[in-house]
Amino acid sequence: MGRDMRIILYTGKGGVGKTSIAAASAVQSAASGKKTLVVSTDRAHSLGDSLDIKLAPEPQLIRPNLWAQEIDSTHEVEKSWGQVQKYMTTLFTAKTVKDITTEELTVFPGMEDLLSLLRILRYYKENAYDVIVIDCAPTGETLALLSFPDMLRWWMDKLFPIKRKAIKLLKPVAEPLLGIPMPSDSVMGEIEKIYSQLDEMRQLFTNKEVTSIRIVVNPEKMVVKEAQRSFTYLNIYDFNVDAIIVNKVIPDNVSDQYFTVWKEIQKKYKDMIKESFAPLPMYYAPLFEKEVVGLEILERMGKEIFKDEDPVEIKYNARTQRVIKE
Image (cartoon, rainbow, N blue to C red; front, top):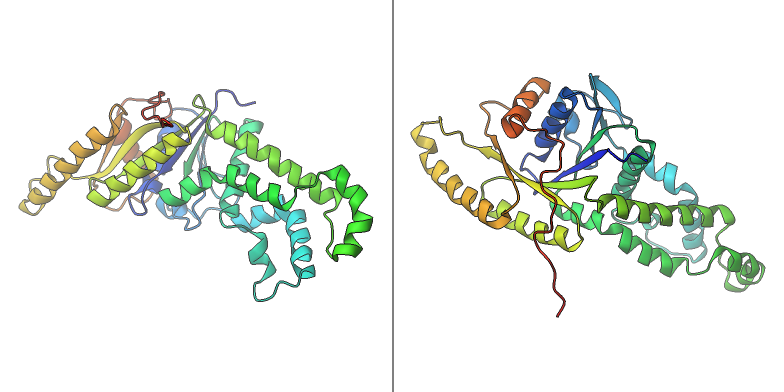
């Protein structure tokens, strides 16, 4: 098991620049000699655009020690969920569910993202990389996704309450009687496999020695407010948030009058970010003079954020908020 491996998830409100920060961290990590994979689980993939390289659904080497991948969820659904999906299609057809395509019914919301995370679990078990940097979907979706293993387990317990042995006994009687097909051995096998993977995934993503989440913010009111909410949720689920990255900060040496007011506004929100997230470490990325696209500027960005620090080490590892049940 990849004990020394690191998994870093970057999340934040849409448009804050998560993808650039994730890519810059990965570039920096690879430059320090660690085998690094940067992977996007966001369906609106922009990782390839950020690196300025057309990416594939499998990892590809883009420079020494650096692989990149945009996970294709349909590809994953077919591989990990095929048997169950086929069974559920026949189940819904047998019950003559009209007006909804059966494919829609058999892929739950969030299922595709979940399968992306199962792919990451596989890399971890294979110890394929030293570091995996994940560019996640916007905060709300990421939170839903991280709580998904618990939710799916509940859903599947309702749908498949009968265990394998019972099905064998009931199959000859129940099928003709109820007029619905009972799941086969291979379907039950796949369900049991998904169960155990969900448990492993939950353990992996809450393992503070391996996984940490970094919230990317801009010094703007709505962004900071959303980040505060997601930070609380992440703490409730016991995930380790180890740093806050403040992106698009107007540099001090910009003296143009047009930016004076903006700098004052940003100062106010930078202070608010410090107060809201203390004692977490803060890292800052400037608003660059050009678009952050391509390896060269991503390298610059990584150096600006982490200076001489190792971008991969766990920056903080203690609970900052607790939920007290009265």
